[in-house]
Picture 1 (cartoon, rainbow, N blue to C red):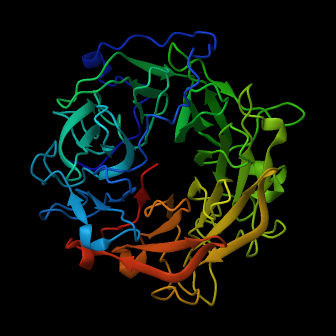
Picture 2: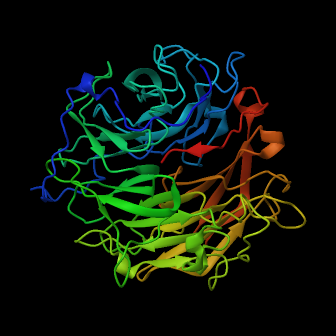
Length: 498
């Protein structure tokens, strides 16, 4: 396919017409009649149904069949002893049964997510190829599914094609039960202003139920995350945006789920009124164990005018926003950077990634130590140390009854004792982070992507967990050599499942 040569097209004509999509109703929030939680029907990453979650990692810039930046997704299956690289599988648009054809620049794996779309008891893998051409439409983008089964992932269908040039459908994707019908739905984005909602149930020919389009005024969507923030048993959607060309105007929109689907979005407000300054990255999980999922926002880019009023933005910051029956409690939000008490490192805004350490560039939420409180892994891919620039690191922060805390936080890098390899300039270790309980022991392990490793070949690190948190003991790494893929310029580890 052709590389993008122009500005993103304003507006989206995503091909929801093929699903019988209707306009999104601006319905008032209504709780479902069932008390079942929004995550009950969602199998977390278990593609082969053996009870152990599996890890999917993307390399959207990888060469496949001689086609540069065609992209692939690799899967390593979980087991009683954790992730086993001997079980690895690689999927691309050159794989038999997978929708599409591998072409230069398709960026297959631009975004990946999981859900049991067809309700057969196996998690499926949803994959975006945001730079795929659709007919004569350049960079329209596609969204496809690889189906789970007793023998793991195989076969696939196209869920959605962009209908206009530069729609870049599939650059972001999340899943959840947004209408409370106990089937999983898929949300993806395109261009600046629109989000497409594909409603389940799905069948294996790729057919979906009724869809909808969320449209708001002149917003550019930066990231999305889903979870039950208001505790009503239906998934909600959080979206990080900025206003048009005003990069400084970052904020978070909250779309509550309801029996009628996602309701109209509102801006999360801060204490004292006014919109809460958001960031470019989002994750959701119940950090304080109160039954409401909490939002964590990462603001990795600093140097904007608004930093004058947000001093913690120096070097990047994260903001913890508790969930509540009324939705996100922005007035109770707490922000952290590397100068916050207990957080390892020093906030540096001049020698890191893009002008900062990029603290908060990646986020993942899960219970690391098995205490019942979900913890947060924070990527810091711009971190420099020991004379290395942008070598990268990951910080883990603990969840407590009072929410997220810097107390007991830990930092890991390739220079941490016991971690394979060594930190080098431009490794960007921590560009992506994923917490996943691959051995199903109640404690999530940590997977870290470093797409800059080995001159942009990229690699993935896996850290084990204990009751004391993540440990470097027993950690291991894998890359193109293990996967049998082309290493040059692949940037393996650019993204994990959201």
